Image 1 (cartoon, rainbow, N blue to C red):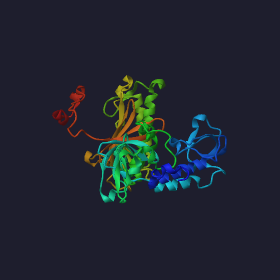
Image 2 (image 1 turned 90 degrees about the horizontal axis):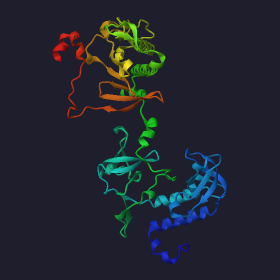
Image 3 (image 1 turned 135 degrees about the horizontal axis):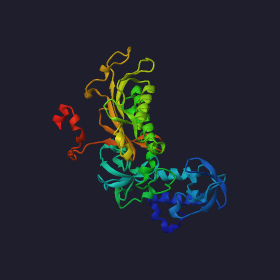
Image 4 (image 1 turned 180 degrees about the vertical axis):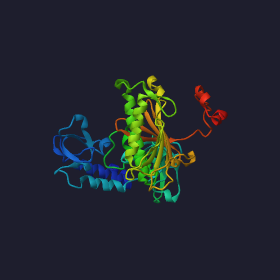
Length: 440
């Protein structure tokens, strides 16, 4: 009270105001021990302490949380940062300089009123120390949700990232602070609590989150094809190895298609496949890639390719497995010379015969209802792998920089049925089987 004078006695009579004054006085006292040019240790954005020099010291309210600006020795001026007392190490500062202020401030943390929040409202929600744009899905008043009463959806992320969050992890003008009255009860203030006063970390944010954050974070947070398969198949290692081999085959084929022009791989190979189609050079290359990748996976017992007359039966017991795979390594290859999208198609069966003997044709000549995995890979403006394990359809996109298929989304049909489009190659109608001709 002596520091601020008798004129503020009424103001500081409130507990929260007294603590605020104490924090201001404490911070001023600590910063008085620092000076411009002083060498010390400061915490960098990676959480480690590095040699730094004090550039500026501020006593303004705006800089109360981070009153000291430092320059990290050996770094560019653009890396200069305002830091809190917690993020400094110096013989001039007591070891608990920042923690004392933090403890005092934690006692003054106000209760928040969430009555102004509604479903669909856009807010900023904190995750891993960073705030992201999010939409409110639910605001609960149930007792079992008291600690985390708001469920949010992070913009640009999948529904799997939705979570319940506490009030102090949200930023919105519609969140109001509560203040204690003389009876010890709380009531909402007329004004919304400034977002700056709600901090979950001692170190302030370097910047305001934007709608581009999901794009920038996608490569780090996205689920890879292998991760998704292991999770969705409940740890089926053999199926994970098979899908890893298929994914690898798709990557190699995509790379071959990209280099086809300069490598002189356009045009016919001078032969016909099992269905009578003229074989392209890339058909042969894609077939070799798929066959080698699947054979080397060690989990396949029988392979059927459109480019080969007979099924490939793997005789060696040490290198065969329980899966039978039918595939067209490069469907639509006649479009290659026109630079039109092409793709690979595959389906997987689990063998029924004894594993003590090689597979037979009967292991794969079965109805489509017994397929355990099916999908296709489209090579176009982007390389996308679409697969199903019988529980929905999942879409993955190849990130060429990482060489990984990353999960994009679950593919869902329009509940209303979508567009009604009839599409087929009627030029081949003379070669159609009677049941297909009758159906069309």
